[in-house]
Image (cartoon, rainbow, N blue to C red; front, side):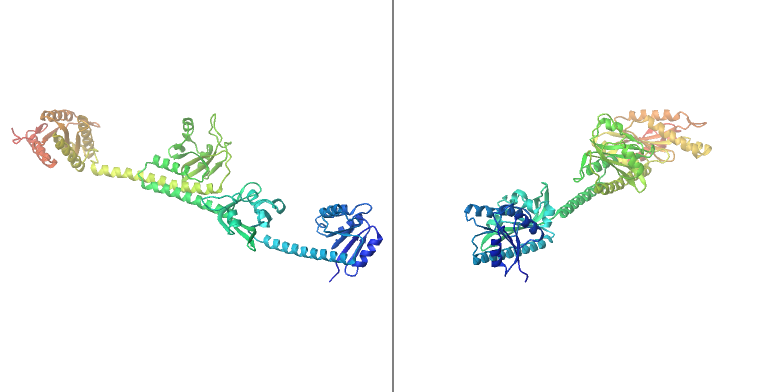
Length: 604
């Protein structure tokens, strides 16, 4: 084993010789005679211990000690002052400067050897402890989690590399600070009838764990952490605690993303659920706009609009809006493709983002407030249907999640728009089919089927109101010769003309139907006397006796009318039609072009 080195700093040769004789056999001795030489030598070759004279020419021993203690690389070298002065004040000054001991002159060999050996052994021990501490720190610095060591008062004594990186503190800046003042504001906070973490760890000696907590960072912001604090107990006494914390920022961000994803799915699900409701296109768009404006994670101004493409003009038409002023509605009523942000979104078929009112915002007005936009095309494949226009706060940073969610929402909206269009088309077709099933194709009048359906209602009302109802059976005179002579086209036009004439004579509450060929049925409600029926019949005869001009052909026809009255002549439509037909037969027998109300003896 190599000898340890002792540096003797003394300006008196006698003192140097005595100390060298005492220590020379066991240690490597280096000698300098001034403080300046000592500082130069120590800077190059640090010794294991320094025997330093207090009083010397030039730098004193106290000054040399002070300079050595000020440097990190030499402050741990043990310094033992040697002096002829044996006063308490000098010893105290030296010890306060960092010396470890004093040896007074004259030198006693056994005292010198004992003290030197003792301090070298202590130095070796401290070096071993420092090496062990450094090793432990290196081990702790390899941990991914942050680790804090606290003393018995809850002051920080150490923070590992991961902890320094997470919280932004250095060991030196954090050391000695109370946990609750520097790192953990909840350290001494009680709540909900529970002990504070400090009480739990220090008073009760129990570990503390919280999977969703937060620590202060040096910059004043908070770091979300999973926190575990364990007491350090020695001989039944709490000597401190170890704090282990795991950064859960990624977990919290994922939780936020999951919540945003769930909110997005709920919004789109709510949109699709409206498809089962009987909504008009306008109401459907209102609901869609309300849904997207209320998605919680979207930072919107709760203002927006939906434009639909008008196929006839090729322009965007403002269809529904939220929180628009009347002037905005007027300005944005029609937007050309390529004009302003909405027109650009329609033209390019992509999301247009503007963080503020800029040169793209070509539709403007005096007093316009600062804002931004997301304008999203609504398309069914390559076919443009419209644009969703959303308002955002001025200076809003672009967000990739907006760029994902809004097109998906607009695709769902496009599906619903197509659904509503299909519904409208199907409704139109259904109405046309229902009309065709219940109306005469040629004249547009109710057919026999609708006649029976409506008369069922009329008869029920007449019975309830104790009122009368008249049924007229009309057969056109001279229609067959005209149809045979001039053809079916003229005949069809003549029947259409008759239908219009009959409707012109009747009230809105009356019903006229064509039941086939040249036969028509009229039902009149609210009849108080047979004379009313006679007056209507005379008007019909008078009107139909006028020639009908069909192109270049003047067609004279006239008609025969048989009349029955509810309830006198029957209580069902079939009964009334039968009686009216009998009366019609009488008219035909009498030469046509007249009317007859059913009588038990119709020839009278």
